[in-house]
Amino acid sequence: MQYLKNYLNKIIARGNKKLAESISKTAEDIGKNYISTFSFTSHEIGLLFGNVQSGKTGQMFGILCKAADLGFPAFLILTTDNVVLQEQTLDRVKADLDGFCICGEDDSGIFIENSLIQPAVVILKKNSRVLRKWANIFNTTGFMKGNPLFIIDDEADAASLNTFINRKGKQQSSINKYLDSIKNGATSSLYLQVTGTPQAILLQTLASGWHPYFTYYFQPGSAYLGGDFFFPSSQKPDCITFLETIKEDTKEAVIRHITVSAQVLASGGKVCNCLIHPSVRVAAHQNFAKKINKVLDWCKANNADFKAEIAKHYAALSPQKAAKQPIDVVVSKAESLVTNNEINIFIMNGKNDVESSAYAQGSNIVIGGNTLSRGVTFPGLQTIYYTRTSKKPQADTMWQHSRIFGYDRDPGMMMIYIDEHLYKLFSDINATNNSIIAQMERGIDDVKIYYPEGLNPTRKNVLDNKRVEIISGGTNYYPFYPDNDTIEDISELLKVFDNTEPYYQVSLRLIKEVLSHIIPSPDFKLSAFISVLDTMLADTPTGQGILIVRRERDVAQGTGALISPNDWKLGGQFTDKPVLTMYQVTGNKGWKGRKLWIPNIKLPHGTIYYDVLEEDTQGE
Image (cartoon, rainbow, N blue to C red; front, top):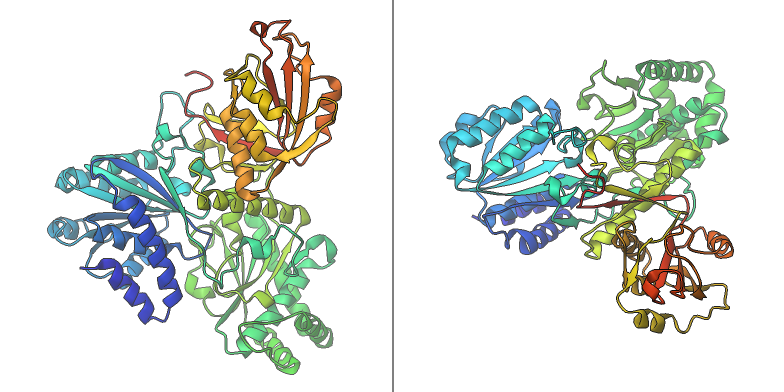
């Protein structure tokens, strides 16, 4: 049976030819490069990276089908610990995949009776009780003793990693332990991590068993609105309104939502949603619900002013997915929504559960905190009010919680109300996401991550603090006891750069070539600096840096101060580029009497670079 072909034909029959083409490319690429070369005797791990809410599930299913075509008889799909999400995934597998034995959490009997006659697909949520149960099932049936297991871990950075990594005695958190047991209990396994926020995964060590051997990024479709639409590198787009610039922010957001809802529903649309994410605190959610109701009451009591506000927002709309309705039609529909109490307000938090069907149609305002996260999608989301802050913001959490991105948004009617400093944080996160993508697309295996100071890549309890190296931009780094592979080769590279010139602007590729001739001492992580330069070149292939060259420096070895105050000050003037200062010492004061070249490197200011060291830097 041709599992991938059947799946693609089903998608095409639904009218999604371009989606089928995208899935086919991903499945064939991963099939050719990683699955067809699998030894069926090893345990390997890979990463499928796609933008948040960009259609990862379809890509996952395509890869699963390709793996079945290439001989994998057993599959495990893992979802976050959410009953509704696990059931939705199970239903979707049953609807989309033909020719498989499909099992939910309570279908162990079906799995055993099938005996892998048909390829089996088991869908489980990442819950300790559930994983322990199925670890025992896989072990007792004996099927996996002689067969490979293909595991697809959706949102793999969310709960799968070891949160006890920094505890003594190499402890494992329970979910991580059971996942280890399942994958290592098979004769071989291919574990595919899937996420739109891979920061935590990329900062795992190979020794941990959770760092991917390979990474693959798939492009979103053309209708997708993602980070570059909302947070471009150049200037603030029209769909962003800074809360500092408006007086009555709640009123502004609510009336904007009513206007867009009127346009969408009057055009025959099914749903228009507004999302308000003020805080994790339940009290803040209740407070916003009260504010919204006051605005709706004002709309009812001040009809003329309400119409004027609708007209103001109407003028700013440029719908692209339907013709713009006449102003009188939009105003009339807006009045109807308000007077007939058709604007629904839902609070989603630990105390209030809301079924997805509740906001699947009509005009809705959803208020929440942590529940507005992975797996939760809001159709027709056009207006977002986001003010959630944290003393120690995490890039992956912020990106997942925003819920901004997707395919069914109308770009001409999007609006995000946000604090200016939060907008800057999101823009920084998007810049790093683009860097990660650029590195993956250029085939860089050792993907590097960097963020501005004050923004963490992920939660600290999943990062091995003995092996995650932090390099601070703006700090001068140099080795105490360096060596050169050949002094002559460095001298030849630098001969065109005169001592008397204060500095030169040069290609980062030249800086890399110079550093390649340095033999560092253990205190100077040369490989980390070269990796950072590779990251910059992935972002900007013509990347530039500053080179300062000084010869005949009568500097003593081991004194602590390498470059002169003047050169230190000179290098400090350049805050947005790497600065490499190369000193050639006389050899009169140590250095084994040799005229060695000593590097001093400073990376762009205000940025923290993260590097994973496979060797323990602090001892056990």
